Length: 309
Image (cartoon, rainbow, N blue to C red):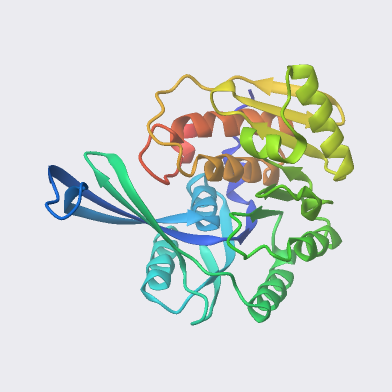
C-alpha cells in the first residue's frame, strides 16, 4: 500500500449529504433490579453526546485531514443545538435545514458496565418542502467540492436521492453511496455503492460461494451503471468489484469492541482517498485499515490521520 497521501488530503473537499443523527449515551452502574418490574436499575454517572449518521461521516473526514461540508435535516430542538455545537467543535462546515415539525433524529442508549441495556429512537420523516430545500442547498454547494457522499440511514433525508445523484453527475463529481433498503435502483448512476454483507444479500440474494458473490455483485454493478461496488464483509474483510474484476482484502486483526459507526468511518476514508486521487483498490485498503481501528472503540468514533498513517 502506498504512503498516506497527507498533502493531497489537505486540499480535498468532500460534500456529505444524508441523515444527520445525534447518538446520546447514558453510562451507569447496575447494582440491583427494580422492585417495580424485572429490569435493572441504572444509576447514571456519565452522559455523552456524539455525532451519528451523515454527521459522523463528516467528522471522520475532517479527522483524516480533509475539509467536510455537511447538508442535512434537523429539528428546532435541544438535540439540534447539540448537533450544531458538536459539528462546530469538529470543524465541519454545516448547512443544516431546521423544521419544528421534523424533530432531530436521536438515538439514546443506556449502558450499564459498558453493556448496552436499552436504546430509544426519536425520528420523523421530513416534509416534501424540506426535501426540496435540501436539494436546492446541495445544488449551490456542488461546484466547490471534489467528491459527494450520500449517507443513507433510511430516515428520509435521501428520499429524493435520484435527483441528488443527477445533480452531482451533471457537475462531473464522483458519488459515493452508503445504501439502505432493497431498492438499489434509487442509486443508479452513482460512482461507488458500499453495501455491507447483509445489505448486499437483501439487494442481490444470498450467495453460496465466492464465484456466486462475484456474479451477483458484477451483475448489480452493471445494472446500476456503477464504476465500483464495495461489499464490506465484517470479519471476512472487503471485496471490491470494478470493470477490471474483483479485489479482496482481509479484515485487520483487531479486537472488536463496538461496530457502531464503523461503516461511517469506512465511507469517510474512501471519500477522502478518492478526493486525494487514490485509486479504488488502494482506497479500499486504507478504508479497511480505518475500519479495523474504529471497531476497537466504544460507540460512534473517529479515526485520525495519525492513527491511520
